[in-house]
Length: 381
Image (cartoon, rainbow, N blue to C red):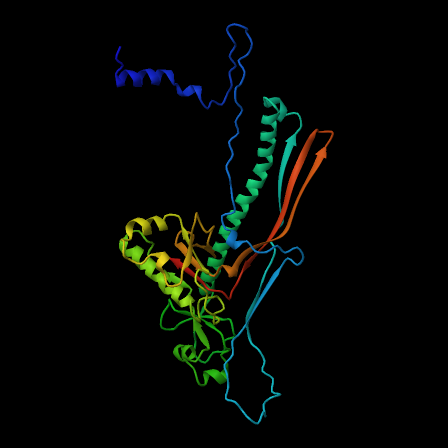
């Protein structure tokens, strides 16, 4: 008899009932001949493989001191040679950008219990038991991996927040006013132009340089350029504008530059491939699909950047303002952002009376964010 496709569909639908799979309760069946319970034929526990998604942000272990201190010495200018050597003993005191410190986080504990004589009862054989026990331990390891992955995402978010926060704490530049090194100022001519004082503005200096423009021109104020406001790539035009901006920034990073760090210091060139461009999910697909062949591609940049997609950058809040949805890319020198593990210990203890074992992971980390490395936030206004 010829079977039609409609008949085949109906027969299979009535045969392969969904209630036979994935039920939350177990109803035993009995063998028609022996009367014994039909045995479970397979025991399954599916697991996923979780890996460190940001090994480039993993700092070296800190087994002893747990805090990190960062200093950055200024570069110097030459002076005309004096053949008399009259100034040989005159001190040439170094100057530094404002120092900063990174402190350890609260120690965290991962804890799981193994109840004796419980897994054995649910397993069919020793192989099932070994697999179940290994997976039980693996969930602790995977939990730690996911924890550290999110810590690294949030570390990026914190670095972004510090860049944004620097502007929110700025004062409007006022003539004939003393400003210390490290003070962030807002231009009198534009609400979107910010700068950082890198040479102290004193009564002696503002007698000569008493406007925003003259202080910038003479190196007392360095304009901050580490936030770029750009529409999120959604089509060919916005995708091309985004790629062109990345190319421009990578070229800037290839030579000495100022204004691309929180300290405004002069930074030297970075070798090709040393910068990392973090992008939120969804950006690369627009670039791949919407940006036409023949336009600038990331792998054709003069100074190559390593592009990495990220689910998110954690939560980016400055005061009561949430910038989480506005920031979609972050171009950095990865030396300046690291998560350092300063303590890691695994231990177990047996409770003989309760007949169970507790397993532990203890962990403490120090998050490091540099104020002196290249870092540019790309966001929507």
